[in-house]
Each structure stands twice: as structure tokens, then as C-alpha cells.
Image (cartoon, rainbow, N blue to C red; front, side, top):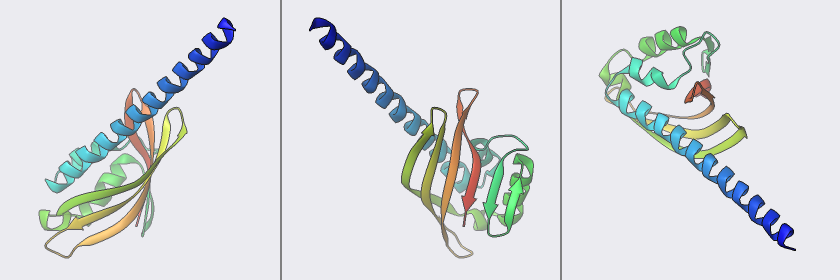
Length: 143
């Protein structure tokens, strides 16, 4: 009987640890998004891009099709949002963060940009992957 109780306690401890880890992952992902929001709202697109995986394998899928690679995504953002009037003030509404595997989550949300040239609103799905201990966006679908 003592062995069964010990085993149940051990299983409960592992479950608690797993839940804590998932919460920490989600908090870290939220921190990346917060840093991006702040950088965007300062019209610092390069700092905003720090949330993305700096790789040719990064994928951004928007209204104009797929953009491949970190550098091409940066160029796309700089071209589409050339001034502070275009970047405006960004806010997010995160609707869901779901674990896919130990080092991969997807995030569903809405973005809202208040700006002088007209507000912009849309939805997004991001795939985050933990790379070298940091959460990075490896795929972004925004429209």
C-alpha cells in the first residue's frame, strides 16, 4: 500500500512539474510578444524581428503569399511599414496558446494597429519553437 501511495505522489509531482513548465513556456512566449509589441510601437522593426527565428527557413504567410527567410521578412516589413505613421501603436489579443510538443507551441490571436494612416486589424497564427533556449517564431500567418 505504501508503494502505491508513493507512486501516486510521484505521478502527481510529475504532473505538477509538467504544468509548471507549460505555464513557464506560455509566459515566455507572451514575453516575446510583449517585446515585439513595444518594439513595433517605437517603429523599431529590427528589434521587433528579434522575436523571429533568424533563419532562411522562417516562413511568413500573408495576403501577398509566402515570404521565406528572416532577411526577406524584415525587408517585407520595412517596405510595408516605412514610417512611424505606418507602424502606429500595436496591441495583441491572444486567444489561444497550445502546446504541440515539448518545444513547439502555436498561438492564435488578433492584432490591432492604431495609426495616423488608418487603423489596421487582423488575425494571426504563430508557430513558436524553442531554439537554443529561446522562444522564436518559426512560422507566421497573418492577415
